Length: 273
Image (cartoon, rainbow, N blue to C red; front, top):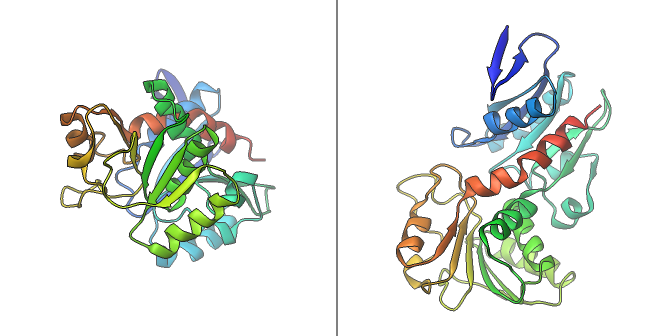
């Protein structure tokens, strides 16, 4: 079967290179189309498919996936980015430091998985493309999971003067802050839902995917002229971003973050043996 995607052709037969994106929920992910497009732009006959896997089933899924020899790699999304790490044979330095991964590929045809964490670079590139420089800025981050950890590290490495982290799980928040203190001389603090006084407020939680979700941060406390960013890709304009824009804030959606890292994700996955 011959399919056309983004003006290029995908031959859907037994020779196609197969990759998956794993999450719970999964309907919101943009990567099947976006990453498949990047594969085709690189001349690879490859396909990324969505896979809905619950936390309870995740270890068994990974064990089974290792035996599916034409499944060359996976994109890992909510809530599995931290849970995947014990199942990996190797990690890039940043993924090892943060204890999370959002992309994994085979090390050898019958071997284990190698993981990386690209969310931080994706958000940083999306912010800088929109005109925001973290250098010397005060930043509030909601979410200390896999995406939040990566974004925190990237913003600190880009020169943020202060980073406050808010998370509904104090143990996870404090663990991230402790690791970051070993790495950065910036001022690090326990945050709250109140973004008053910050130059940038980032939602790195899943809150906002559903209409009934509470706000991750109190958008009404954002100062006009501040920046707001979100990792949620569906809807592209979350309630948090809409309220921030109404306050006169510049906003960066999760779709921009995804677009900024899509090429790197494709290159990482295609490097599988």
